[in-house]
Length: 397
Image (cartoon, rainbow, N blue to C red):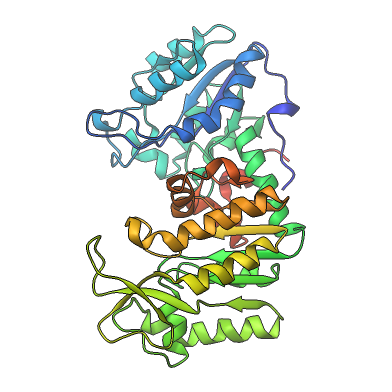
């Protein structure tokens, strides 16, 4: 997608309305526990402020169900941004209305205001044209830098572009498209995709789209048990999608037809229950005992998967290898993260598709050793499925 970006336009003295993704996690005292999303938006924010633009930021936070709720105020995000920028960030009482318009018109060059949570209005998620028009009236230029919501056609991401002449991508969206786009369009080979997570049903479209692009697919997570059961293996009490057994077999056949190496685990870690105190041990995939649950990939699989990753030039990872939230069942996921960090060091392009995979890499302390970590789980998944993202499609070519 060749889209105009912040680099292509003049900003000086203009009111720049920027959609960011400040949907950050808060603790009970409304302290931000992870500000990665705010930090990721800083390059675009600084570009506007340094070039004398008048910046109006808008975002959603959580699910306030279409009405004002102080628990979901963006005030903590504005305060954190102010600290990061080392300059004041004004906080508006709403995102539309006369008062907001007056505050916005009072902005001077190089000043910034944060609008209150867009989802305090049901019209945002309904992509209501009047609401979109009212948002658009606040700025002269629209910038979308919220990749995490680009797969949703909401008023602030898609509707708004009908009422502004200049609608461009911010640097974060530009970076996401560069890495995810290049991986799908012209990857350096060998290209290895690693897919994890609990259900095949959530990854079918990704698998089928990637089958046209990759050389090797490594599969982990609970969805392996649907493949195993489809091949006649006992899976104990592991999670299986019984209505997807035929699909699992057809995916194995598709890979064969397209000459793609599809690797399933050789061994798994099993436990009687999913809990931090449960006894667990590795077993071969054709010897899963009755009553046991598969919770992670085993040591043989970790070694085999790591070899494939270290031989790759492009690696794309979406979905953990096991129940990584429990430390004892995180070893497989961490082994993949470690192999990817080594691959990066030897010159491969390594891309993490947001969501749980990004959380796992962060938990492993290896975030800085990847080429690119996507900021949008759902958006990156839809992009990898080959779907058009409405919030990006709507921007100026």
